[in-house]
Length: 124
Image 1 (cartoon, helix red, strand yellow):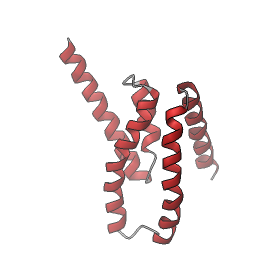
Image 2 (cartoon, helix red, strand yellow):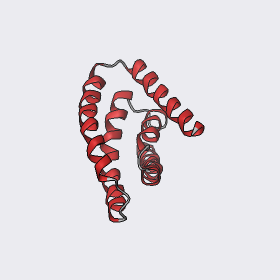
Image 3 (spheres, rainbow, N blue to C red):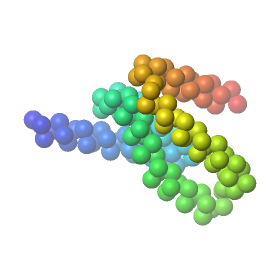
């Protein structure tokens, strides 16, 4: 029975990865908005671990997508360098805040960001 459960979890994990990778490659980001809820709701992962794991998942996906975008000359390097400066500081701050943020607050803040992003995407 455990073997069937392990196989089912593996299949679900691979499907989540496929959808996450497709979203990341297609939209240039957004994999975390799929990976985090999927890991929590489908795989039963802890909220904090799902967020941290999503970052680890997105890194190789982003590197692969970046190679494609760079090789096709789609990158605005001037903008990239400016945003990376803030992104590094924000990534550090976010990782520190994850350690102290209660799970119920983390879930609500993440949901608010997803709703704001969705409204902005629809409105523009």
